[in-house]
Amino acid sequence: MHIVRGDTIGYLSYRLHQLPRTVKIGVVLLGLLGLTVLIGLLGGSGRILPMLALVALPFMAVSFGASVRYFDTLVLVLPLTALLLRFIELPTGTQSTLPASLVLTLGMVAVWGLTMLVRHEWQVPASPFTWPLLIFMLICIISLPWGMLWRDPILNMRVMGGNFLVTQVGALVTMLSLMCVPFLVGRFVDQVWKIKFYVGCFIVVGVLMTATQFLHIRQNILNDRGSWGLWLTVPLFTLLLFTPTLRWRWRVLIIGLIGWHLYLVVVLNTSWLSGWLPTVVAMAIVLFKRSRLMFTIALAIALTFAALGPGQAYLDQVVTNEVHEGGMERLDIWGRNFGVIMDHWFLGTGPAGYAPYNMTYFPWDARSTHNNHMDILAQFGFVGMGVWLWFTVTSVRYGWRVFKQAPEGFLRLTALTAVTGWIGAHVSMLFGDWMLPFAYNQGITGFSYVAYNWIFLGLLISIDRVTQEAKPVAAPQPEPLARR
Image 1 (tube, rainbow, N blue to C red):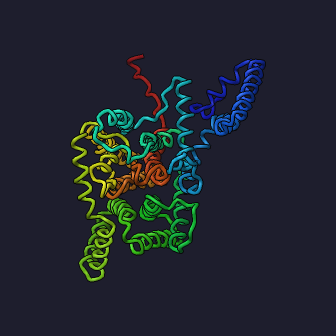
Image 2: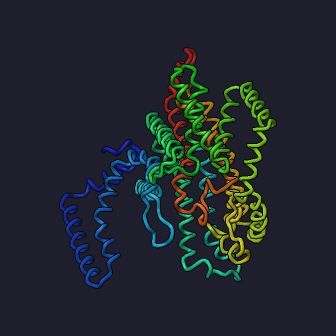
Image 3: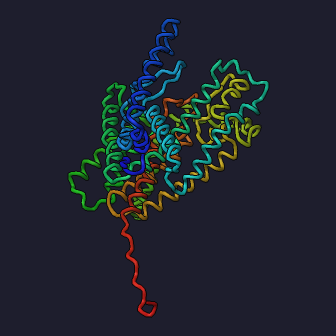
């Protein structure tokens, strides 16, 4: 019996191959005959879309078989679809589209879940944050019918159009898919070269993103939104500080790339606070971990610069840009939404559920909170927020533990990158929905660039697994002669 990697999807193929050949041929012929008849009936009655769906069915079956056979390789495509395939989006019949990375993730989760059902085997990787995250996912699911059950009867649902439930389901599926990403990565990225491939994708594509933005090259391929700069800069910065054997030409190149990106986002794009502040925070933590003396010197230089004329002018510009971007208005938005939160404090209003409240009660300024913490409170209540905080604390503590236990070299650097970047990503939650995209802000299309954060959380599990598997097994000690 041969199963791909011994722990993946090959079991399905194995069971199918055990069927007698005549049974296989008979099933295929009967299936094709029935499919042909249905296609003819639908085409004759003018029902084109169902007919096209049936025509695509054999191709879907072939795709499913290929994904089953090459599942481990398919997981390696995940960062590429998120980083590179910005232009591939599938229509949904509404104003939203499905990005290629979301479709791929949904397909992989479906195949993986089917495999676990068939094999009666729980394959979700174990970690301290596994159960908090699974419980939070369950709360997200329960909050949908809960929010509908306790919805205020005076809400004007007509302003939301006739497909608000579809929007809610789409938002729920998007968030659940994001939270499945670390489990997929942690389970199937199980070798050092795969981890290197993931990190390399973010560095190489991140440099291309910096170049296209700096040179004002219009393109619809690279997904240069969200936290892409965070996952370009922090790996390079960690490599620079924690690799004493790094040659000088590589050091100069890395310093140039980091400086180039920071000049782009901090100086040229000052107003995008949520784009560069998380990166600076993560880099500061890395520097503190490398040397408290170096961190103190850098902090003193930054404070001195802030006290001087150019520094004060820069800070004034940052504040002015934030005000122009509506930063101060967020306090009013949070205050209005907090009233909705207190009326639905237990399990919230459900995915995207507070949107009709804003449209009904504050139609003159019905905006999202632009704060992921407030989004979680409004959508999933204090119960959901409590579990989310539990998940956050356990994931950060787990990241530091993985970093301390990882062997010197690439794995340890990647663990430090992942945990500090994960902290930086949580800082970005203060300025927008950069962790769980809100349906009427980032929307479903935000999945691709929000997934960057969740991918690196999954790499922590991968590093932990590789580290544990590499530890030598202690040989049994011989019993004393007196006991023999």
